[in-house]
Length: 166
Length: 193
Image 1 (cartoon, rainbow over the protein chains, first blue to last red):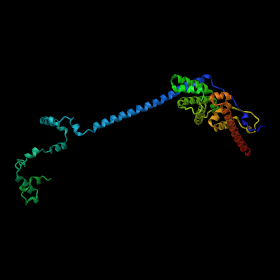
Image 2: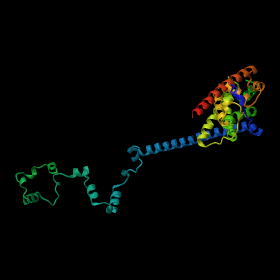
Image 3: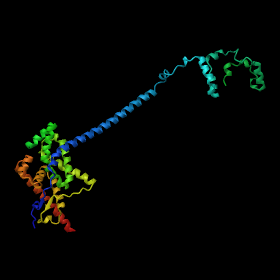
């Protein structure tokens, strides 16, 4: 039995069965086509990413524009609403009369409590009290109610503003 | 680099239909050599064809960057070796690839080879070749496995026959030592059992 160093003499490489010549001649064409396809796929992916990016950008732009529209200063908005100054007083009165039933009692009281400056100016010492009420009536009312507190005071000494504190 | 290689490279770098034609000629010339190299490791003809296709895709992609510092064959040999190992690693992970092709035959009469299967010897042989420098491995591949003469290898690689003979001798010596070492180690281990 051989033990020499040339072990390779005892290992015989077999001649492999080779593919047909067509296989080798088509290798280059297939490789070029496959590489181009891979390149196109990569380009396709890039294109999809580009589409998504554009869509996101468009949504952001629309969002910003809409946000700006809604956050417009009040002054700018009010110019677009028809001015109440153009509506005449009779028209307003007519409208209120027609739609009076639509208001609650509280709403009417709230609206009535708004006193215009002109109305305030009309109030004077002479017409402060309604015409049918006299000061004597008030004095008798107070005495009836036993408001002793005011006995020592002359009601005429009270200032109008003092009386309006409550 | 041989004149043939230079013409192909110039054609490929020029691009267009001339480039494609040059690449086709290169594939026909180197394809069979690289296929044998792959088959020795993959041991499966179908898988070897797929690997070779991938090798040529890589070659087509990278050939314009080839600077010619090594011979075209040793460059292709290296790409083929790496690509084969990468694909086999992935394929073996995915499926159990049937490795059916007989690549070597054991001729009886050597004590170290007794009791070893051809499959085991081939695994060791592949490991020994992989441990060689690429140029030596490429020469060994063409001479030992593919039975090319030194004259033919000179035409393929553009290296003188003298240099090729020296390379082959060194490669053979390293591989023999590797096999002796591994096989004797195996024998020692089995005798202990």
